[in-house]
Picture: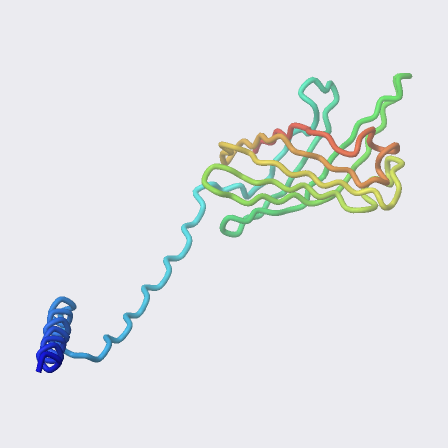
Length: 182
């Protein structure tokens, strides 16, 4: 008899708990609710910074009396900016003779707010006109904080291919200032 009372008490408790759970969930149905469709993701906002256009400026050390002249023709698609870059290296041999050497490559930027993550690429062969080996290439990266539609300034970490060291570069890497304006 005691076992029967315990069983009845357990069954009643189970029924009451199930009913309370159904009421708390807002449904008396025991079938699960259909999953709701997820809202579509919002399209990324267009960047407020427009870097498309013709840029010119310099690349070099802060105290460099002859920084490298830079020209960049940038096109922009959303937050991605890219285009050809030309550098003009001026060499003075100490005897009053000045030689100008063009170097071509690409420069790209990825915009995030008012920052632009910059990548400079000078491919193998770009330095043959100034005596560099055909395997010599250069890559530079940096971030222009607070870039504007008319001014970019960034410290670029420049990394030279090992074949460049001793020919066009004294070190495997250096930091140079990139300053551009429209």
